[in-house]
Length: 328
Image 1 (cartoon, helix red, strand yellow):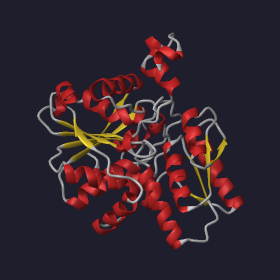
Image 2 (spheres, one colour):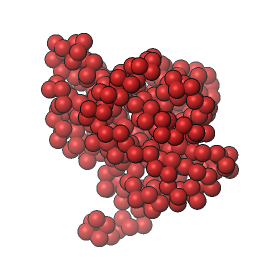
Image 3 (cartoon, one colour):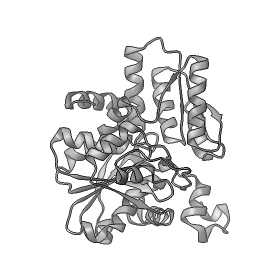
């Protein structure tokens, strides 16, 4: 999909807007897992998620190669939309984002604040995506999918940063939504000639890639009812699946309860706020604690965009009856 020179150039494009994010070894997490662990903090980008890297690389190429493009349109549950809005504003390009009805309020507000025109449509991501594709053809806009080579190239820059800081990782756990993050990690690892085992993580309520990985062919699901909206995918991307099938060691499924516990642990052990997908890697590592003992582990904390109301209901349900003032 790209070579090391292209990845280095993409890193320069991203670096003009986003500083390298930290990769910290947290002793309390190491005690909990019984093995050394490094967390890649993609929750520390300007949009609090890794996808901003892909948006910057995508829009940079578009402005160079397709300068007459009148505007962009896409669908999202949040982080992809924030990414495109951030990059589009930086490059002076209009962008329309479709979200499903009932989408996270704080994500919607953030996308609007970054200049996106926000449209609510459908009951889930797939319905919003189909409507965005339809509007693209009607309005002459460029449709930006959730998985695209330029998006993968952009998000692979976080893997480049991580692997160059921690060359000796034995296992890296990566959450899977539409697949750009794990594909970027696989491709960066291979370009650097490393032996790190890459393990994907999916929700038990949205396991389409896990089912596909087990079957050896694309498998769709009828629903994606996880609270971890960054992993709420029910139709795998065929290109992403091929990279994952050939480059991942396995895919671990974690429940929403396990993810909620991992969000709490990341707060208590590192004082970092994680969204559902961002905590999924830790949830998987905890599930495989015996398997990884004695190995050096990497966890991708892919984002920190979780609504306060969702945090109350999911992560801290025992505190939900308290006043907002007391919780805040």
